[in-house]
Length: 268
Image (cartoon, rainbow, N blue to C red; front, side, top):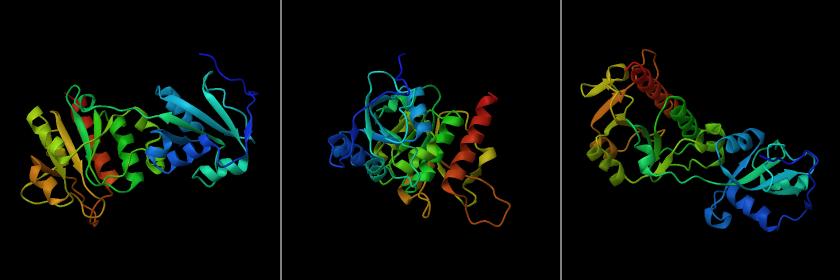
């Protein structure tokens, strides 16, 4: 693979009305139509992770105060922006001076259902940090995919992207309706509702069998799983907490359950 030299030159763009700059701004804002379906990433680490994961780079943007990263493949469009224009587009307070437009992957449900599925279902999660953390945990603990329901924040939200630390580039994240999720049961996938309470119908995480095909449903941060999700669940699972806390953070709860599933499956 050929790379740009650190001294690669590019015309400096000083207009905020430049077409590519407007496209990048729209991508950062999550405006898919105006961004042409592109996703924006910012910073050296996410750029390196995107390339390592095989993402297709459309355009790389570099502020005038720094050099073009050596890892940018030859042939990728590079635009050098004035510091003022660059800082007007990106969202971080202390930008690293590099951003990019990438073509997001479009995984299918079949990708999520490979092997003996271990699926995480984000049902109405609204905090992007929680979703990004869960995507990262899903990759770390061997999940086959993440399903996001209507009302759940996008995994390509900038905070979710940063929280995933690049896992979203590799972990299949698929939008799914309740009907599609309910249909998983006909394909042998058990739907497990994650709850914060313990009653006669609830199974403790360490006593639940995660070794077969299953999907963990994590609900809204404040309200938990809505009634309709509870009704289609095959079982309820909880994480026993001896301490005097009311409930666990959604990302922590999901991560602990994914770890327990990974622990059980590694012992098969």
